[in-house]
Image 1: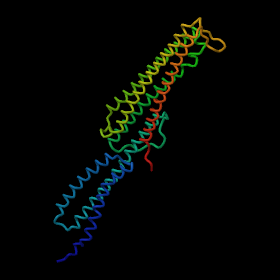
Image 2: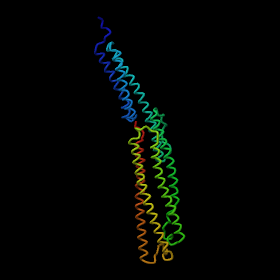
Image 3: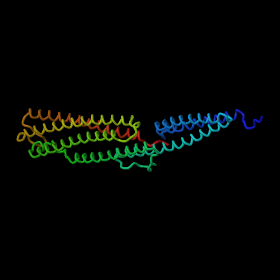
Image 4: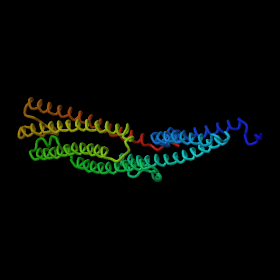
Length: 328
């Protein structure tokens, strides 16, 4: 009998080992890409799961078809399956890199909008390869457009706050003039309107953001920790806004109390030698108590403003860190 067509078992074993290495490499390449930041773990896991099932079925079919053939043919077929799987994995890795690049580019533009820096720096990213990634990019771009409009509205409101000259609100000259007191009341009325407007604007912005996230067409597995973190940011924003509005109204009331007292002292109190002079020690004590209360409220308001601004800056820094480009 001629055994020239039957190679030694060692050759078959080597080919089988190469085939197993190729299969393992093909399965692990997407996982490696995801772990290195060049792909999405969910997409990699889905590809690996589908590939394992497909390879199992194909190898089972090949084993049945080639059961009467020499072992070498099965080893070669298995190696061919491994090579095809590697090629498919490389294509998947490339597609995942495009997806993650497109999502990160959209995220960087969102961060630039948050930081009021216009367009993000850097070359334009390649379009996303998968439909899911395109949905995520559209979601992030839509959030950026929404944020850009809200930032413009907030800047307009800030300018209106800046137009109020509060430097002469409670000067000695003001507190001894009926006309100046009336002007200060008008300023505080306008300030109160702006505080209410700011309160409503922040609440509306948060609710608009929540509605956008709730109705957005985005893959469900992206509604995980990132969107959960966004919900926590929204809750903290509303909490600090409520504190800011409450202490702002306290300040408005305290200024009103000072103006009411000054109104009652017209004709009695005088502006003399650069000082506010009252008719009695009792009036002096009352004025000092009102002023002290107003200053304490002002300090509390300043502290709340600082906390609110710190919250905003932390939100920007967290977004910048989470959406930072991958290091190469």
